Length: 498
Image (cartoon, rainbow, N blue to C red; front, side):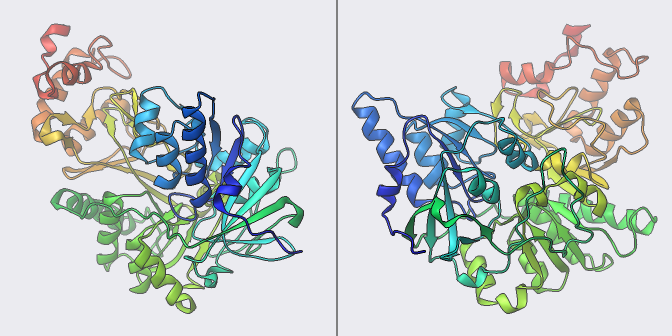
């Protein structure tokens, strides 16, 4: 079967007000770009005419500016799930313009299959190759593309020549059965392959091919600094200590790492620590730092959902595909983030917190409890099921006006029952086996900035120390309230709450 070549504008014209659109990709990697940019133009034209035009968007994770950015600015999005990093989208969410649903990434595909989110009218899938019999070879990410292709009434392929077709074979496409027929996912080591290197669909569903040459809208992260470098070294020292104590096998365990400059600093420190053996990754994203460690022989294998790397790094992978082919695999997000597999493999999770409270509860999504930052992403998938769950963050922000260690988090994403280790540039709080009051002491003494240690101890004094989990309820969010009043948490006066 031969497919019709159409323009991005022609493809976008098929999207109508009220449609639910599914997009490939996971982070800006592998995300459809050309069609969404044209949808934004249609929305602006319809709004100029006084007509309604908004759509709902289902993705694997965040996208680039050509999707979340342009569509948010065009006021074209009614509903969006599950994760984003675009500043214009974030502004629209926090001003109430977009209905945003922050879903665990491992659950996004299955919630679509279960019918919780409505039908998928059209899927737009970026590919490096598509065959006449309906084999779709994805580009730099797995995301929820297999489920979208199976559920969508119609499929548009963005055939993107910016991605080498040497990518063919790197994916491992596998969809679990839904309950009550689901079976175990047979991954027993990060390098196991259990599916196909392509998505197979009825070719009659593919209604057009949009030919593009559009590189991924990759993000550069801030360079490391003394604070992130110290956090990275603290993580490496902790893991090395656990290995020497026999709590981690001498062969080490697979690692999961989030996105950003702290994650890069942590991986850099682990790579430099030669007493830690070469290790494997079972994670949702792979950044430049991991590719460097693979080249250096410090990472033996990387299982991921997305190559969240800069474009020059991605081109380097394509150029050296003979080297990388047996060292990387890309999976759909419900497999890369699957709780069953994470627990079986004994993955050590490493994610970033916005704030941590005295008992180990973590806020990773909301600024001051109300303003969405990016979303929970896959941090919950890994944290709740990890062999050891680690959260990192600088102890202070805004030149010390904000403490990352607070009496009570203003929004809770990860409870004390799941969080095992807190690490800042100040040190390490090992919460394993500790009661709530013991956790509070460890966090204050080891992780809080010196400017805030006495402030936090003073809170504990007014919190009713005989309780199982002491809190002065009327004062628990006092540091956040003080930040709103004076712009500096250090100005808190606990005597007002006695």
